[in-house]
Length: 251
Image (cartoon, rainbow, N blue to C red):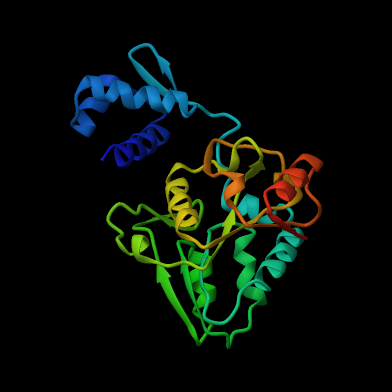
């Protein structure tokens, strides 16, 4: 599958920093032309750059920040946003909670006797959900990624296509009008795309610093979400867009 191979090439080049075309052709058992097309896609995504005889990884502004470093940043603000998001959860909801340093706080403010269903790929959400006696928990993702404390890879996860999700609570590293909701992790992006397409309502949790920003990969258009949960009013242009498209801003 092309998307899976792209992910694997990205992982390989990030680990090894450089690779030749011939080396990639042999490792992934495809033709030179196929590898060249894959490489061109990674170049367009600004993940690698071409060098003589091959490619090398780009260390730039799109590099994802380590989870623990992000978790410390704006900690109290993120807890506050998580508390607001928790108020949106009702009995018998089927919800998805995204991995992230803001979404991690949602369950801290939910009644532990509430009966509802959680779907997640976040290790931290799984651990917190285990404290709820009336919660049904479903886990997606086939491979654990320590840097983001999440599970990735859904190629053979058929459960994801069957879930009827009432509300999804999504993290984003960028929220703007042109590029919508974005993040910097390729493997996470595919999961986010699937979830936001399946959910009846999409809520994005993002503090003011994310507003107007855009990172490497878009997973949802801004017009397709239902609520922005944040710490203060977004910039005027985002407020106007939300008003025109009936997107609620909760802060």
